[in-house]
Amino acid sequence: MYLSSNSCLQKIKEALNKKNFSTDDEDVQNACIVCNFNIKDATQLLIEREKIKQHMHDILQKKEFHVTTKIIKKICIKYKYNYDKIETYLLRFGYTKKNIISFLKEKNITLSENILEKDIEMCSGFYTHVISNLKLKYNIT
View (tube, rainbow, N blue to C red):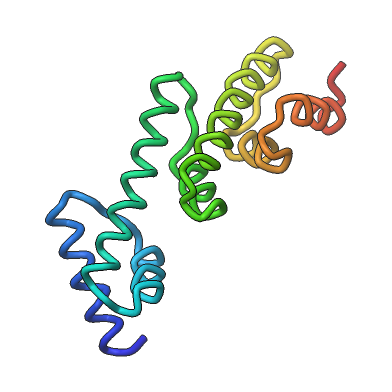
């Protein structure tokens, strides 16, 4: 990276910390590039994105859907921070995860959260697809 980009990264991180937000270097770099190294615009963009992630996390918690922040971030990036698409997908994902966990408990099967979330993500969060996949994969009747 060039000195100007490193300078931009540092200034944005400082601005975010002052406003009690934190994000990883990759997100900051992306915002710098998207906003043509304009510190004010990049900081504002990151704050908006972090608010979306926090809001999605809060919605999922209220519904008692335990979706990892890694998945929330991944879906936000996938749908380019389009609020409606993110909300629709994450609610479907949360519903599916909660019900799949119940299904697996009923069958006395345990899966790690990472494997479970990968399976749900692979099926775009659709419950019936995940169930069919799990039945085939683990020979469940």
